[in-house]
Amino acid sequence: MKVKDEKFHTGEVIVRSQSIRDLLGHSPDPTQKAMAMHIEEILRICKPKKENKYSDLDSTSHNLEKKIGRGATGFAYYQFDISGDTYQLDMEVRYNTYETPYALKRIKKERPLSR
Image (cartoon, rainbow, N blue to C red; front, side, top):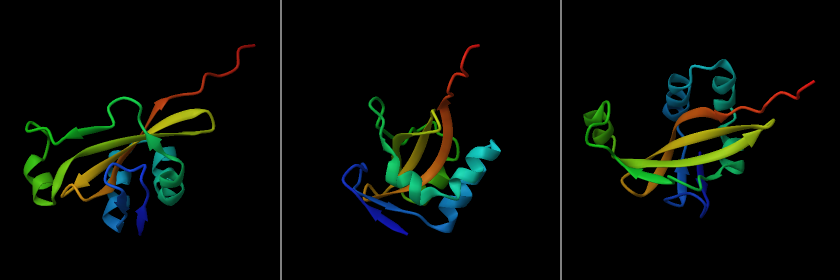
C-alpha cells in the first residue's frame, strides 16, 4: 500500500507486509499489536510530532548495518490520539525518498476520572 501526503517527511509512505511484522515485533503491548493491523487508519489520523519530527540514523544505532542495508537514512516521528491516549508512530525513512512504519508506542495514557 502506498500513501502520498504532504504531512509525511518524504511525502510518501509505503506499507509492506514486513512493515506490519516490524510494528508487531516492536510493540510488546497487545493493544498496540492490534492497532498495527489498522495502519491505514493510523496513517490517516497521525500528525508530525511538534518536537523531534525527524532524526538522522544514529551511527551507534542497534542493528546499524541491517538498517543501512535496507536503505534507512533516518526516522520520522508522528503522533495520534485514540480514546484519550496519545501514541507515537515511528517511521523508518529509506533512501530519503519514502517512509515505512517501524514502531508504535503509547506515550501518554488518559488519566482515569477521579471519584
